[in-house]
Length: 293
Image (cartoon, rainbow, N blue to C red; front, side, top):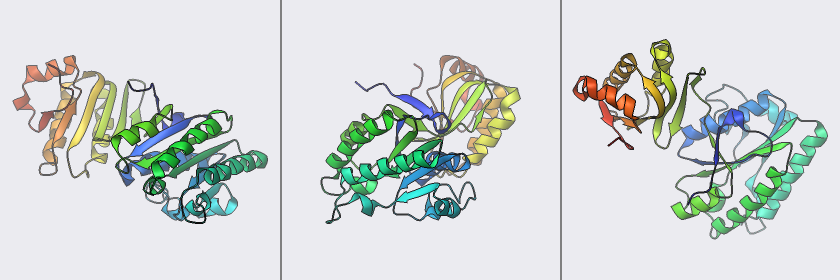
């Protein structure tokens, strides 16, 4: 049985949250980690990033936000911890070295007057070392104790989704209580549209009516460059009108040759609307996973 997890967009993370991101690709890192870092640097938080990359190579900073993080690194608001700091003399990942460095940076941030500390790092490199899974698992448990007790710090632990076995990935996930996801692309209290990455596409929650067609069309355009199947998760949708279905049909037709457009978790009421219209009148739409009986 899976442990209960809180699912939160980046913007809703708070001090004490030790969050988990098993990312599918660089695009997911840019949306989730890019927002996490950008929000911290745009505010009054110190950002601690465990990486061997240069500040300009951090996910989303230049590509999404056109922001040079170099000045933030120079001022100390952005602190890069190299993986070398977390390794012993033989180059093997040492969890104690890493956690000591993170705890030291949290203490320095508090002394410097920062309102919060955001900690993140892609630990795929450590998992790929011989025996790396056991060391990363132990590190996550200590990290959870460090962050959960803090009134200042929050963390997102990142790993590549395919860097270890599904069983190991599940065990690592279990050391966290929060699963972080991208911020909504659109939200107005009636409809929320969130980009998804595994599978790639969008998740819709609420009601999609004529007043929100423009926002929906704009969000569809933002995923037009996906070169394989696109999934639209309708599981949280209570209502969808005919105009929105036509927008989906037009989007599917524009993508001919790039992959299918699958409607996942189609609720009974929208399914009844489509059945009444007839699937043949909505060419390009395909019933996906979690389909109604």
